[in-house]
Length: 336
Image (tube, rainbow, N blue to C red; front, side, top):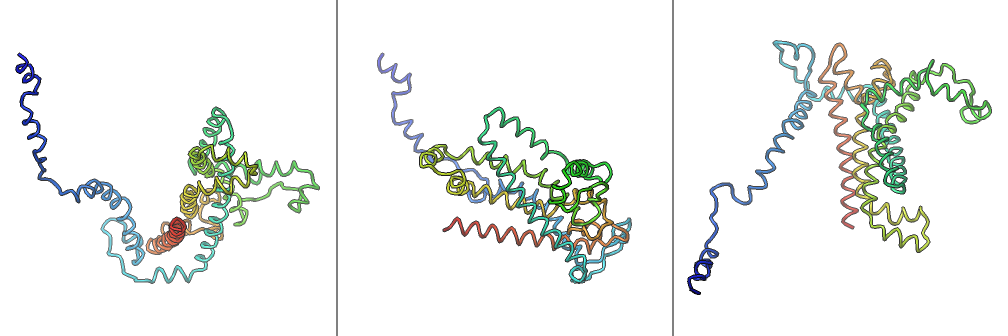
């Protein structure tokens, strides 16, 4: 009976399971092991190729041709190959240097202000309680989620020369204070959106207002990952808040700041909608940046799409150079 029970429990023949364990696993007839990761990557690569690389190729190819209405209407005519003529015309144009200056100065100022304000707000949110922090995050993220067109229209109303809140608020200042700060006391009818300098002043305020919430929330997420023991040790050592930020917070958040800096540079180099709405279209050529200039050349009558594509290629190359230099600097720093 004892033997029968043992066999029933599968323990009577101990060599059979051993043979099953020693049996070599059956290999499929599919892809080899080295090709499996590439097979998983293939759908993503195809999507990138269709949605990103092919349009980029079309833009580069168009920049070497003369493309107008005859090349895009039904029964199109072949585009004339111009070689580097479009690029030569771009660099010879006075608008290129004006647009490049506006693009670079605006991006530098806006990126610096966005990162500074976003970091300060992120530090403030980290010190608040959970309920108040959540409430403020929802509020500021509403500004970030607002469509660029709506944001630009709101700021255009605020800085309207006749009924804008900005002129009304400045007129409420005491005359001595307004004269000391701005050299004038009467702001009635101030046309903020006529001159390039004041247009970009309003543009910086509008873009920073719409961009800092993302920076603040990203910094807050990075602060949550820093062990609280480090701050407690700094507090016991009598470290000031500025020294604590410089010695603990900033080094540990450096990867976060690196990503945010690159993203901010790319976003602010490509600002289009805000400037288009605030400047009232493409009539003020002194206020052009590179995206607005490329759009104007490509789609205004008569359309010069090859010329506009050349401007876009130059803008893309500038952004890639800035990003590559900064990423290389990050990699070198990490290797030290």
